[in-house]
Image (cartoon, rainbow, N blue to C red; front, side, top):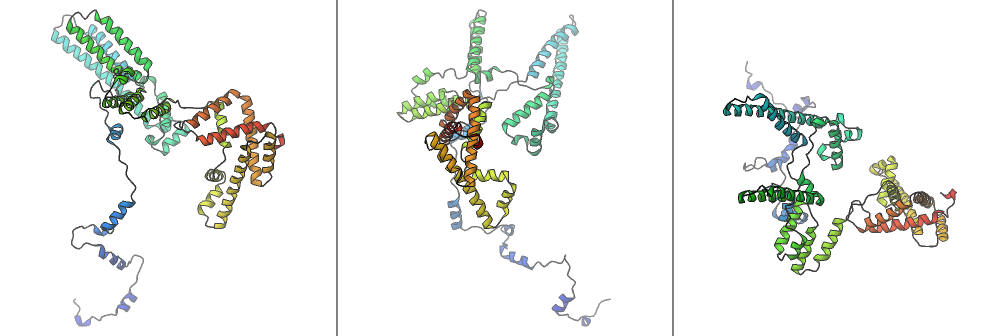
Length: 495
């Protein structure tokens, strides 16, 4: 039934809200009206409400001024880093991008050739027509190739299985790294170790190892390169007697030149050719070819010759310096020298950051306090604590490198140890280092002498990986000399 209009009684707004039962699902969206100025009512950009305010031109210029300066690569650097290394012809082989078959493929190729001959002699009748012989031989070859492909696919599946089940094959430390991280993001040494473990796990007949390739061997080894060139010349001499026509001689020469280019594509670039060259562009192209091929040290000869042609005296010393760093072999320590290097690192006084990191590693409560405490007094006490220990250690080091006579140095070291508790700990540390160093140096005198030579060489050549600074090397060697000297003058109770 329709209600009459006159029966409706308006209710005051206050009473209406008072009578409503508001629950947690009833929301008030009035605050969203603040978004209204963001809308573009002209419908030019329907998504403008979801973006911030556009910058005016002055703000854009200010933002551009605060951006860091962008250093763009030259076209040469882009070419070096990103060019696709296609092998366009046999005169420009790219570095290490040779396609080499696996040993399994070569083994199955030989099996196909041998099996084809055996089956053809056994299965093809002698009185068959030429067409039948060709058809049967094609069928035999097709069957052998299918079997070869099946063998290679089976080997690939075994390798894929090992790659997909690394967590079940690898030992514990590597298993956790593979479980927690992507294989491609691991360190290259860890990936090499993982590949070697997986390769050992795969049965030998299924391993996909690269076959020996003379191009790669000649690329990395001048000794192998000369041996291969000598072999090519000997084979050319043997076949020269059979080349009795000009066409055969030209073909033999072409094949021999092809294999010489495979083994040594830059045979024309020699020290004599570089010395006699008078064109800077040619020298530049030769240095790039050498860089792309194997990075031979003839690059530096090209630089020096280019410097002579351009009459720039700075190029020669610069090339000598770079070549000395290039030819400087990576210095590594044996087991005994590694122990001397650990003592060497301990003898260098800690910086503020190193001391704090050491304390945080030994005391987790300190780390939590520094991260979460807002009490300035506690933080000041911690700072005063490690500042006191750092200054005490520096005072002990100052005594050891002071150059005083041995007796005075020992007395000064004992005197410094009585200043405070921190000074006592610092003096005790270097007394213990002196004792350990003396025992090791007496036990391995040759290794100690070689370690001193190596650490000095590492300080002189900053290109060495993980090499300490020259100043740190000088300080460490002076500390070592002082520690060895004072060790005999310290009583057993002080150690």
